[in-house]
Amino acid sequence: MLLLRLHSSAALRASRVLPPLLQRSVPHTGSCVSFSTSQSASDGSQPPVHVPVLLQETVAALSRNVSDDSKPHYFVDGTAGFGGHSRAILQRFPEAKLLCIDRDPEVLSIAKANLAEFHGRVIFQNGSYAELAKHLEAAEFPDEVDGILVDFGANSFHFDAARRGFSVLNDGPLDMRFNQRDSTLPTAADAVNTLSEVQLTKIFRDYGEERLAKEFAKAIVREREERGKVFETTRDLRECIERIANMWKSGDKTKKKKKSKRASKLGSTHPATRCFQALRIYVNDELYHVDNGVKQLVNHLAPHGRLVTIAFHSLEDRPIKDFFRDLVRSKF
Image (tube, rainbow, N blue to C red):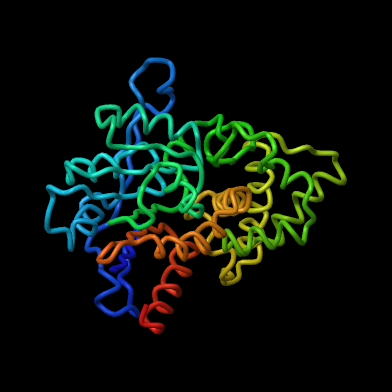
């Protein structure tokens, strides 16, 4: 088996730890552009599409060690999104069958529309790649496949569609669930309105790496307890965080002292960006899926099969590197 970790960010970084067999540096920056994401594939209109990150690198990685394109191959796209990577895989392997999995049923329906021309070669399953064994069985796929792809994090659609509540810039309900159809799942609003200052601080710090985690959490709880505030929209949360961030900025200027490490980072992005990321990761338990899911995926690779992972930030990337390193040490 061969494992490949791709890292998509403003500056792509090659692994400095893994041996050549388990890593590959990527020479350019990944990008993701979305179009017409306000439309729905279910209303008969043109389904939205996007340009997937690291497309050529992903296909090249999955193609390695595959010498005979004429025989059937089985692949898994564990985070199907709009089907961009899936389309490229199906085009590269004309006899291949593909299992597309996604936790978001709305996004999966868009993938179905975008991949309609491949009917008979692609099967769709709503759920998590962390439960791959179940999905393989339901799709009547072999237990071991030739290649698996997982692209961690949210889809660009989640940020573009205000009603999904992911974006710090677009006003909408404070939701952030990948699966909005499951009413039993808690929303970001549930977390913000019920969790304690200590709990919110931990979320912002651990999942957002936010330097002002404690200050933002304290402000949220104060709004709730002293003013009876109920956070219902992304705007409610954004404005609360903005006020505290601006206080830190103005206080720094008034004292005319050297900027602290915490305050100096404010301003490069919206001050609520990291808190929104943290809440999204918490609500969808994303790091659990990364941590446990990837460890299960390697057990479903056929001899010479390949696992390709695409990570956007260090919280996703770090556990993958650690796991790959452990595999090397154990001579897996």
